[in-house]
Amino acid sequence: MAAAPKIEGMKQPLSLVVLMLLANGMSLPSESASSVAPRASGAAAQPYAVSGAAQTAGISGRITDAAGQPAPGVRVTAVPAKGGAAVHGVSAPDGTYELGEMTEGVYFVDFDLLGFDITRRNHVRVTAKTTAHADAVLYVTGICDCVKVTPPQQLGPRWGQVLSASGHPLPHARLQLVRPQREFDYTDAEGRFVIHVPLDERVPLTVSESGFRPATQQVSGAITTAPLVFRMRPANGASLLDTERLPRPFGCFSLAERRRTAIVCWPPSGRRFSRTGWRSC
Image 1 (cartoon, rainbow, N blue to C red):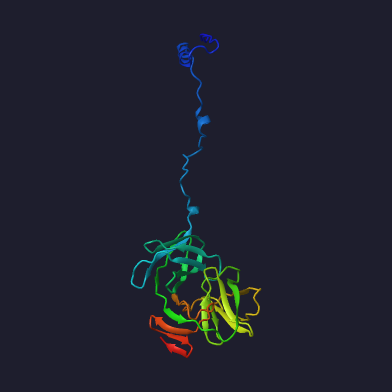
Image 2: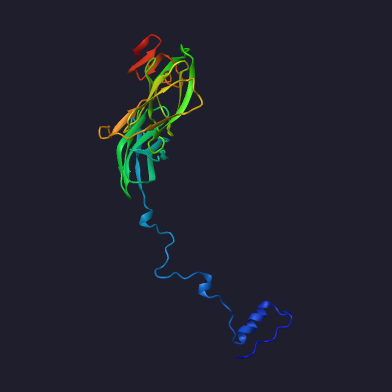
């Protein structure tokens, strides 16, 4: 092989140097394929392939109002029937929703939108790598135009949370006081609540939830530092309806508001408490 020409001090242009090297039969150094990208052993690599193990179970469906129109923005909450971590979602503009990354089991699913009663679907069974289907229809909540009346007793606030036996929140559990008259409310999506009860006596507060045994505690408004905690134990859910409607308490009768007088109720059905007692709306 001929000796490479001498290049003194890099006075010659780089392009000329390259031509002189090629003319003398010398090849330019090149990177090997292995230095540019690692070789894939065996079959060709598929970086975007999703393995079957990554597929998870879920629930999907469509939510409408009583007129059949899609209901967007509905908060969807799926909870294991015997208690466990909840899965949340929101319906799309066309009323459809989809919940993913769920474990196998039986769930109840709540559909919650302001201005409508809560709709609950029970016995929704989720199996591995499949999507269960659960549609829902929402019904407008009754509306009352109320006059606030000062309660005859001094009241104090009590707050707390309703949990399953495993310690997970139970959304939309029903709270009920039966003294001096029957009143009710629901916990929020995280199982939390605030109620106002008399300062000078203890009254029974009963919590009930679909698929769980009711629980009762004697509560007083005089104790405000310790939160109330209800731990619900599972019950036989075979007698539950597939679909439940959880009516929201009218603003007149919420445990948190303690109002008493109903002037106008809509829709015109049911019985509501006023200063003169229970009457039909």
